[in-house]
Image 1: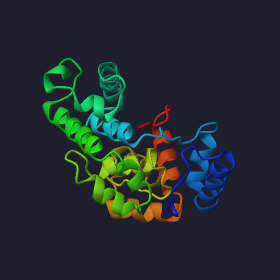
Image 2: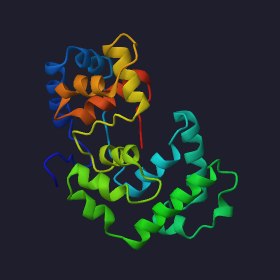
Image 3: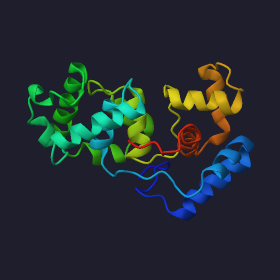
Length: 214
């Protein structure tokens, strides 16, 4: 396990330690954390599923993504790379996926089918190397790879600056809703390290009563 990797389920004591560190460093984050007690980031424990769900959620609303994801799960049983890889593109009719996303999911399934040890291999790589390996798969961009780092590999210090929800939360909570640059967002988040994944999760919570889940 790398130095900044979390176990699949962060213990309550470890989560509380991260929250204390963030709250002590940042009074705004302290208020956000205090307003959202009783839940925490938990891994699905499956890299393929997290990546597939992130691809489904690209450029559509959270509500729409959840609906499409439910139909996709109903189609692909069990939800595994080998099962998805066996499906023809015509079998996705009615799921609500674009032709491009169907192709992306097919490429993702092919990569995991041909490299059955891929998840285990990535677990031992540093964050940027994980991103480099995952973005070799068509349809997996940096944001999708960062969702995998946070929700599947449970890395502590990921800051997905391409995430619109994170940028909106930083704008609202730190800049009175004014437009912000990536440099401003990065500077604001600098005091969250080494818990930027946890802080990002709380930023999402500040926008939505339901925890973000991939």
